[in-house]
Amino acid sequence: MSVDEIRGTARGRAPVPLSVLDLVTVGAGHTATEALRTSVALSRLAESRGFHRFWVAEHHSMPGVASSSPAVILAHLAAHTERIRLGSGGVMLPNHAPLVIAEQFGTLEAMAPGRIDLGLGRAPGTDGATAAALRRTDRLNEGADDFPQQLTELIRFLDDDFPDGHPYARIHAVPGPVQATSPGGVQSPHRPPVWLLGSSGFSARLAGMLGLPFAFAHHFSAQNTVPALDLYRDSFRPSAVLDAPYALIGVAAFAAEDEKEARRQVKAAALNMLRLRRGRPGLVPTPEEAEAYEFGPLEEEFFESWTANVVHGTPDEVRSGLDDLHKRTGADELMLTANAHGGEARLRSYELVADAYGLPAA
Image (cartoon, rainbow, N blue to C red; front, side, top):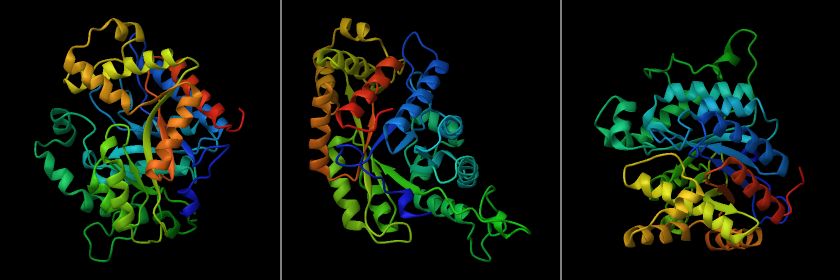
């Protein structure tokens, strides 16, 4: 693993590398199959237009988000792309045994050498009841509190370097480094870089102390972005992975040729989020349904607050908003997530952003 597998290169007129976070959203009237086909098309578009990486995020029990199995989706995307980095944004570590994650991402690395990122979060990616079903326990805080220990265990499985006498010293994640020590074995030069993800200060501080790259969820915790990035940079200690901090932020961004159309699509995504916050998750509604919905005073307040953190409008407006956000945060990379009802609208949004920044033509 090299620093080059972490740091990206800005393309066109973009101030920093641009990447994609895909939630594999399912709109009303559409199927998960269609959503996954859109993800393939989006990954190919991102690759052809010079986006640096393409991540999918683990979510559960949400009808409008079909990304419950990042490793499965990434294997599918690896078969349809050639160069773009693919990864998890992220896998929720407390939901899984570290050995299982090491095996899954070792397999992905074998499928797409030098192209796989392993982003890890400590939230459940769902509600408490679903998290309890995933983890087979109702002691949910236990998993989050054990995150540093689970992380250490996972990295040791990836590097195959448990010390002598450790209970797991004779256990190996395969595919992995142990294969190079077998007769005739050849060591792969790559190992998926580990990223820590977060929406608060916990993972920011931990990533800094360990010298790991950090990804902050600005798209749903905007008020914490600058404090978390400052904490990451202040806590950073150089490591074998990085000699200086490297932080990306996830940004909700949606572009359309017409400002009104962009707002229509964002309103549909906002209504979907409102229903999720109320414990009634569903498919992403159509813009027509969102326009017909009568928001109450508190709902209107939520809508305005939520959309204020979505960079949306015409391509020039989105570019200007992203440039301002970069200046405000000093992020090393911007990872854009365009949530909308239809796949065509989402694909067009990324195309327009690429055009606005003069990214390479497809």
